[in-house]
Length: 92
Image (cartoon, rainbow, N blue to C red; front, side):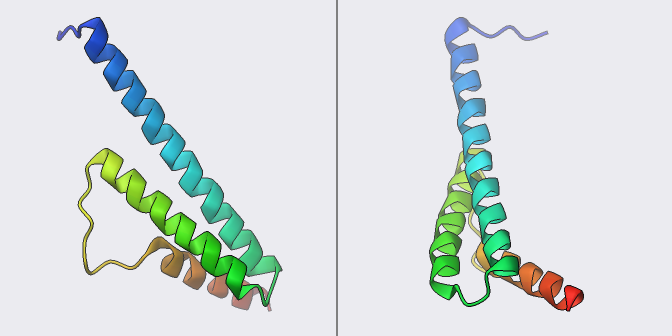
């Protein structure tokens, strides 16, 4: 069994908390985006602003956990926009 020094343990714990905060930020922004997209038609400016924040939060989270940014992937807001449109169309 490996033993960590107190400073290593504190560093790992701080990193885990930062990742948890970043994940929470991303999830809150994603939920807000979906809520507006589904229930507030015509709010494209709000969606664009929240989408940009969501994309930044997602990029920050990826950087924290060490994932490289892949050039061929869509921004999370693009994926969530499609999901919201699909949900809205399914309920019509």
